[in-house]
Image: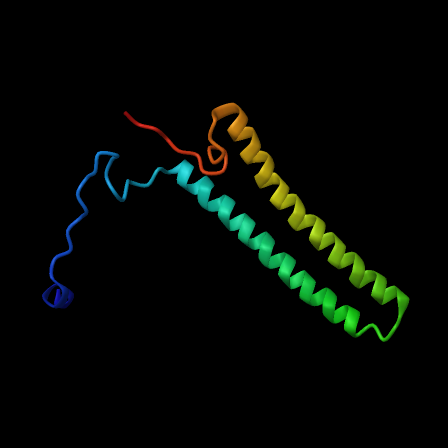
Length: 114
């Protein structure tokens, strides 16, 4: 209650002609959106960590062909992996644009209410 005396009451924003701001949670749709973002972020972090590890392996190889080849393969596989993630987004956007005339419909699904 001390915060109310310092900052005052905070009222909810008024509704606009497009609906209310701060719509209620949409359950499964919101969960899938958050999960997609989380998986993409984890993939990006994993690729960055793999690049760092492969760079260290390359620097510490002391000219051994086997270690240099292993580091190069790790870099290549990481680049292919992040490429697959990026291409998946592009393909989803193209399919959404062709079928629904909205490129974000598959990546950020919405529930329309009347």
